[in-house]
Image 1 (tube, rainbow over the protein chains, first blue to last red):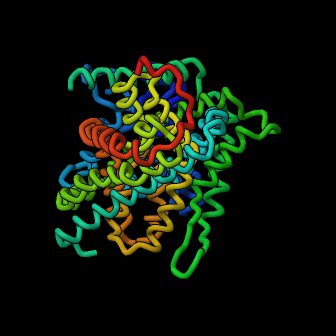
Image 2 (cartoon, rainbow over the protein chains, first blue to last red; image 1 turned 60 degrees about the vertical axis):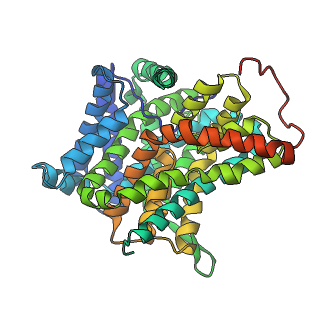
Image 3 (cartoon, rainbow over the protein chains, first blue to last red; image 1 turned 60 degrees about the horizontal axis):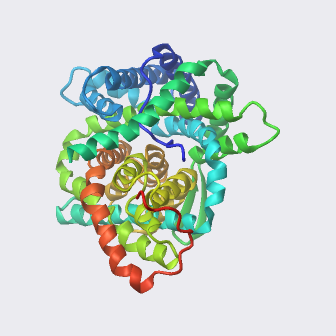
Length: 162
Length: 298
């Protein structure tokens, strides 16, 4: 049975201190990477990461504590959108500091964990053979292109300037 | 429909509980060598920055720093001399990753919030591009049949095969069915090479296809969060000056794939895949490559 990893949306609720420590470690690494790659001041990045960590923490907490069967991804997205919505009083503060953290800095650190985490599936992957690889590549390429082409057609039809 | 929902979420809960145990037991933050390794990898990757390779006139492939850290992370796990990144660290990293994904989602959500008026204006394109995902059935299913897959092909080609879709297929066909074996294979291979592949593929597409920047941004949201991020890299690099809008579209499209994509799979993609399978299989099906096991509980 394969482990369902890679971009899953579900996290624990109990070890709240474990979460806080993990998020702090992640924030520090990302802030350093953000400085090395994009020269954003570390203090600004840390405040930005603090905001994002708080949203994440609330999201995963709500997923478990609220009686609704809603994934943390939805909670986190709704909170992020609401806090940055132009008419909200929090908007200016949140968008200023969060925009200091480049999405690529977050992703670069995130994917290091993904890489280490997916090592466990390596043997299963090797056993699958070239046919599965061809099909997977076709599936990803055609899903991506299908989505891009439909989006392009609708954008052109609705008269969106490039 | 309500029954479908309940079973699907139960399948997801199994994995959530497993992660819970991992995060609880291991005190994951204490594994300082793991985090220090990640820090070193990230600093090296950011220091090198993206590398651009010109394939032919006008077609460039850009290799993003995110690929260096992911591939080096995997290499560190596999390399024998590196004794401080082993199975235990891999499990910790897996648990931690599921928390860190929230940061990525939150960052994209903030970009979406800033550009909400734009997202509303582009609503039709955002919604309808979800239907573009069905292209995989038309292209990948015939090839899967030609390669000798049988009912596995239904699981393998109905969608991009991330967690929500895996849950739907297990729920509909049963854990030991050929359809589920198919989507497991897609899931594993997609996990291993999907992120790398979509990053290269996107950089080729943005440099060679004359599509709207927002269309590329929406398309990058088709798969998992890692795949979204990997596709986003070359798109951001190709269209400087509209980063926030591109992040907004990518993030929102990924959210849509996650939330309504599952219903498209249940109501459209799976029925369509089956229909096409029964139409094409007698004509172009080959000898089965996967031995028939007990399909009775399918």
